[in-house]
Length: 328
Image (cartoon, rainbow, N blue to C red; front, side, top):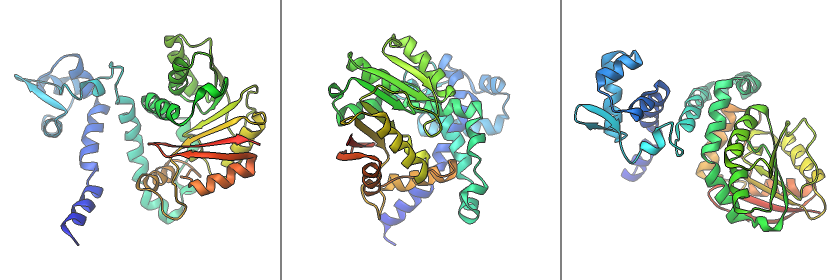
């Protein structure tokens, strides 16, 4: 084994050493407390009701990673990380860290899942019914919303459409960002109640409730709203198996007029035989967190969208890939 390959392997297997202390500090509320005002270790110990020796080890890890710094005898957030670790900041990533905490617990079941099958250990409906977990998931998706919208607008010119149906639109972050840029657009978000409650708050704060409406519904089970000339499926189909994904694509075709656009944005692997590194890893995330979810390849999706009634137009390989098709 070459020295380079050895380092790569150790880096692959050692990522949890950094991730778990950071996520644990977020879960304990440590970052939130020192974001309000720097604290001494003793003040933190009392506030967290923590064991002194263990807390000091955690603080040493955070100091070593550069996430917190000393200010005289007090601890404060490092300036470059403060916008992302302070829950009160508009740039906070704390919701994403909470989401990753739940993912860690799911990933620890991988050995059993490989041996026994995902359906024996994954209770998808129970996970969706967990309010704390759903809140963390929705906030995590909102965190990525602005970047996702920018990627989507690079992939597609929204001046070509007037009304967009955003199936699984979640927090409304993509809708808000795109509609701020394109003031003639009208937008409908179809999603579950938990996601829509976050969307409504965001849209009200942004003054966009006149152009973006929220409709409760399940992408597979419920009737989709009509009257749109584009359907957006953003990071949705990877949560479903082939049967439900086929049903979603056929519903998209039924909801659109001839010539209507399908914008399918997801973690799409360009090749069918060998996934990209991220696509392969994300496929594991779907295995341990969903009943049938998976990463789809571009050749697979081309066949599926064509069978559903679309004509493939192009594929944009950005940070998250976008497939664009037109209703036949």
